[in-house]
Every structure is written in C-alpha cells, then in structure tokens.
Length: 371
Length: 250
Image (cartoon, each protein chain N blue to C red):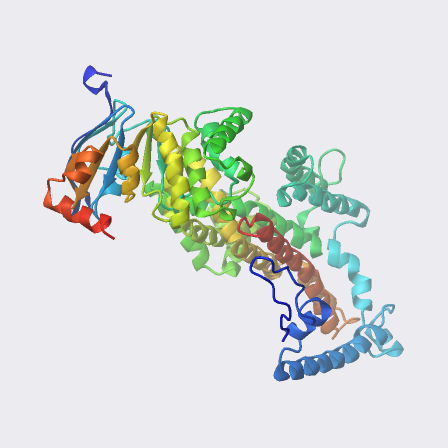
C-alpha cells in the first residue's frame, strides 16, 4: 500500500503516477500470469507442457523431416520425421488441380486481381474507392474469362480440370459474394408486410436450412437434370456454386434477421418521423445497424461455408482434400495421412483465420460507442 | 385548402383509437392554430403520447378525423412521407441513429427527403447545431454525447427539415436534472421563433413560461384545457386538481 504522506488542501491534489508494479511489463505479468498461487502454478505447468510439445513437435516437423524424396520408403531412408516430400511433389496439384501447366499464370493473375477487387469492399476508407469499386464490379467477368478461357485467344479449360485450393477459392469466394446480397434480400423478405414475398422467403429459408448440404449437392450433381429441360447442359461447378450460395444465403438471412430485430423500435419511428421511405430507412438505418450487429454471425456462416466446400469431394470434384486423398491412394505415398491432412488443414486455416481476424477488425472499426 | 382550416394547422375531430380492445383515446377534439404552443400533461397511461403520435401517424387512429396542414390523415395516404417531413418529432429516448455522426444524423433527411445538395444540407445542419449550441460535436457519434446533448441534436435533426409543426414526446423525461435545463432552454428559444409546438411534458415550469394553452388528459380523454395562468390557479375538474396537487407539492 502506498500512503499519501503529504497533505494537500482540497482542490490542489496533483495527479500522481500509479503505484509501482501495477503497469508495464511487470504489472501485466502480475495481473495475467501470477495473480495468485494457483494461477502461478498453472502458468508454470503450462510453460512446461508447451516446452514438451515444442521439443517433441519440432523434431518431427522440422529436424527429422524430409522434403526431398521420390516416395515414402525414400523418406524413411533419410530420417523418420515428417515426410513433406508428398506435399512438395504434389504441391502444384494441391494448388491448381489438373489445370494445364502452361495456363496456370491465368490462375495466378486472377488470384492477385481478386485482392484488388476485394480491397474496396473490405476496407471502406481506401483511397480511390469509387474507381476501385468499378473494377470490383467487372472483376467477376475478368476472372471468369481468365480462368475458363474461350475468349481473346485464351485456351478454353474444362471445369473438370479445376481442383485444389483454386477450386476451393472459386467456390468459396463466389458463394460468399453471392450469398450475402441474397441473404439480405431474404431477411428483408421475411420481415416484409407483403404476404407473398414473406411466404416465398420463409419457404426458401426453411427448406434450405432443413436439408443437409450434402443432399443439396447430390441434387445438384444428379437430380437437377430431371428438372431442367432436356438437352440443357448445365455445368456441374456452376450447379455446385448455386447450391452452396442458396444454402448459406438461408443461414445468412436468419443471422441478419436477428440483427434487424435487435434494432430498437425507436429507430424506425425516428426514420418515419423525418419522412424517410421504406427503402431509404432500409438502406440508411436498418441495414447498416443490422449488418454491424450480425458481423460475427455472418463471418461464422462464411467460415462454415468455406470449410463445407470440402464436401464437393463426394460428388467428384477434387478440392485440396480430394487431391490429398488421391495422393494417399498412390502406392508411393501410402500411409502419409498425417502430413497430407495437416497440409490441407493449413490451407483452410489460413483463409478462415484471415476471415476471423478481418471480422474482428471490422467490428472495432464500426464501433461508435465511447472510447 | 378551405377557409375553415385556414387558421388551424392541426384539426382533430371526434378521434378515437384502440390498442386491441383497449380504448386508449376517446373522442378527442383539438384545434391547433399556427404558432400556437400547447403543453399536454396528465398521468402516465392517459394517452398523451399516443395523441401526438397520431398527428404524424406513428400511431393510426381508427375513428374520426385528423388533418395536418389541411391534409386529411387516412388509410389511402399516398404522400405520408411528405406530411411527416413537415412535422418534426422529438422523442423521450432521443432515437438518434447511433451509426451516423451528429452531422450525418442532421443531414440524412434533408439530403434524401428534401433532395438538398450535400453541401447545402451540411451548412443547414451546422446552422441548427449552432442554434442548439453544440456545433463542436458535429463529427462525434451520438454514443459519445451526454443525454442532454443528444436530445439537442435530436431537436436540431428535426429542425433541419424546416418543419411547420414540432411534436415533443416527453423530451426531458430520460434526462438528469442538470441536463433538463439545457434542453428546456433550447425549446424555449424555439418557442420564441413562433414555431407551432405540441409538447407532452411534466415540466410545469416550462408550461407556465411558454405555453399558450395547457391540456390535461386522463384515461384517454381531454379533461380540461386552459391558459397556463388559469389552468394552474383555477383548475375546475377534480382530477386536474388532484394531478396538480401531486406534481406541484413535492
């Protein structure tokens, strides 16, 4: 305890520095790691466990790992750690699937442009946002032509050659980009005073949520042919993207509906009282607030959708998981499931972790409370 | 506009309203003249808020007639937004838009309802923010202001639409005592500009100072109305006397 030895007359007490050991590194350690006896014991125990993990893991992951080998026995001859050679040898497949080697630059270019197109959507304060948004609008067409080809002397590539991380990004990004606006419309439709709009929205949402995604994918891959006019050849990849979009749009709609319902009634009354129309209220009052509240739920759904793209393996599309399984089925690499699945996990983790961090950043940025 | 409505900006004629089967407003007759300042008081649940919310149709009346600026409020109202933009409203809980800055709160309706260029709307907003004495807060968000400041922003937001009538629904009831004064001062200044005002409030000091007429409501009816002087000194109805003794003697 620090006692004030000086007696100040009222109103003259100066601002004193806080007692030693309550701020800075020492203060942080004291507060967070050694605040009590049991906390201190747990801290030390955790440090010891961490040490064991790193010591054991490091030798398997790095020290005894083999990067250069032609098959599994080749790996084992060199060392008995992880055999990363399977990843190295098949790295291109993990990224590009069976996309022709000579045309892979088109994927690289599209991927880089994706960031340019996404930037103005993700970062509202970016410079030249207006011009960049124009690019964002035409980007889907650019990407489609680049990846699929068939125009401007670009070789046409069949979609059954698509695979690996590139397939995940195509399905994931397209479905995410399409399901947000569709979800918003469905959420508004469900709240609508127009009975027909409401009924259609409710039916759509309940049907999509009530059916497992895998069923929808089977419908997309097989049954859809029965419903479409004979002779229509509807690309499987597009069918999968549509189903994925519908599926996550239903979830997004419910998340956003939660956000809309969390807005106090007074907001609508104020909007009515100043004479805004329904669409003006929706655009300036309802959606900005509802979407802000729903960010964690929306990102949650997106991350779920992104990981669910692995289900396409069941209808024969080769995403990274499919490529990994193909590698494991190869007699040369038989039994290296730990390495393969770890690598697939890392591919997904990078994207999902990025989404999660972005959503935290956005929540902080949009916060208009105190501080 | 017919000559009968000429001097009255609001005419309410034999108006009734029910919430479900609860008869909340009973046979309301009220005429408000241009520039008239009316204070409506009464115990809670007496229907005072509902009455003024009927005037801009935040609540829908089921029987009788309400006309605002000579336009009858009825079911097939096509330009409700246009009428609402002529009637400003200030709420008990401010109802500022928390995701917009103070300035954006004020410019939103002028830009989108009045179709005013953004620059003009901002100048207008700053003018009114200066009038309610918080121009320095223009870039802040409502959540960063005190209750009194928020309510003054709400008044400025309503005034930015240059309304002909201002409705106040218990504007000081959610405020700390020291902030009530700053809001009332703003309202008094507004009254001095000749604005037509309908104020639901328990601030009897305000009623004495600025009201042309005080209306007392109880159980959905207008029980008594008079000039403030006569209302406070010679109330005729027993319920009015009881109410006044309860709120004035504490």
